[in-house]
Length: 299
Image (cartoon, rainbow, N blue to C red; front, side, top):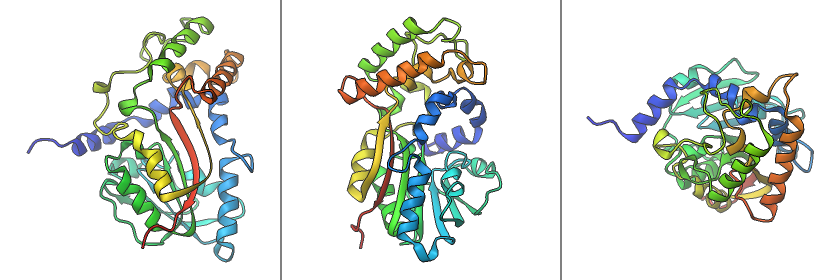
């Protein structure tokens, strides 16, 4: 029997060295990673989710139930369930295609239930969860609309959805204006050594691999994510970012991390330029961080 796209994706994630990837990723750079966690109106993503859940479920605040979809080893999701202060989660279900990824989940403060599942065809129980988290996973789903429908159905009234997702072009390709500005800034502000990736490729004209490099599920329907989010959820707070920082610094995380790393002021300059150019529409944001509440659309 020929190998399907789903088989290819499962094989890729079973064999993926996620720790190696995280060590060189752009979000490993402290000034960039910190930015993701600052969020209005409370000042932090977790703080705002904590506040919304405490308001929605005051009588059950210490016995909340959560879910993480396309969750891998839960390293990107677990903080949303563990770092809250005024509420607490007793149980969390984690859904992922790769059994080996789920086996890598470290012990949690809550009871974790690994669920090997294809999230393209996921069927969730109605009104079971108080919080659903999706961090860097939905863009691997072909059936984006179906997954958002299921997440809406599975949240209790007042339930919260947190997503942190790639919303740029499919297969992680960089829009031309973003690529041009990234090339200019890389070559102007950073040395050849600083621009050399862990694979000894020099970033500049090279920013990202071509679409043929990635498994078939990589950003397969990423441009649909925002529309489906807004169809099934009311957005409480969100921001878009990464239009320059991702193409410039992905693969360079080790070069700018650690107590003695250089380039901090130059990286902050890039962050400020990215904010400005995104706000006036000269570059496209590539990532979305959103906190939303369930719409009453499912019956």
